[in-house]
Image (cartoon, rainbow, N blue to C red):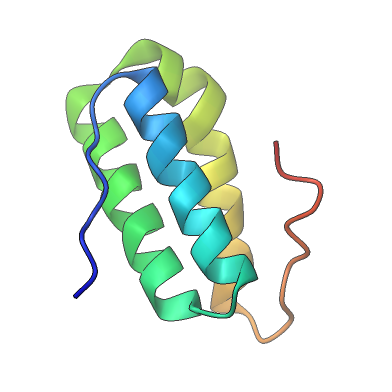
Length: 78
């Protein structure tokens, strides 16, 4: 059973982002995208400024890239 990471301020959100990227990198794309979508929703709903500024653009970039058939290399993220 997979447990969704905790979200909160920037530090917790960065940890959740790292879990999502690791999941995608290891081939579990669906779980990684689910984490990123939940993280996006959390950041947008709370408006936590540092996460909006520093993390949300990366989350949106990966989610957008994962919509297409061409996988996005994650090595340049972070």
